[in-house]
Length: 129
Image 1 (cartoon, rainbow, N blue to C red):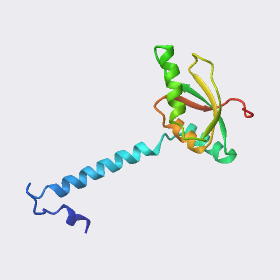
Image 2: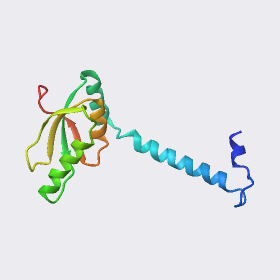
Image 3: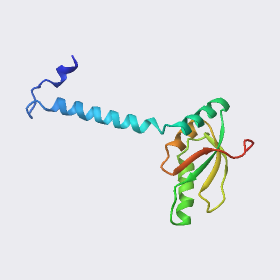
Image 4: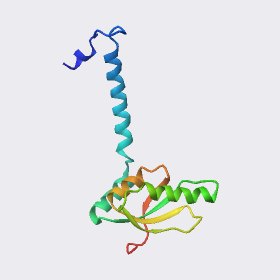
């Protein structure tokens, strides 16, 4: 039944529209599936386990390096703006530094791990934060 979709169909272009559409759909689904999966590995898995156990996790985020201090401030704002409402609190940051400390829940951690503004995410900071 699946292969019937690849048989020539009466189309203006000689029956090649269905196979091309299926190939495009397959490539898009694979690409979007990989993009939505988020980062994997021992660090991300350990952080997710800690959030699952405690509900909230203090984390330290190293921001992507920038050339100007203004760019670094904007990067921190963009990162915080990208987090879902209510998924983080207790933000601590020294102006001009590339490090940001905050407490996140599972939704916030997933966004941090997949963020283009975060160079690294690690457990850390004060648990009472």
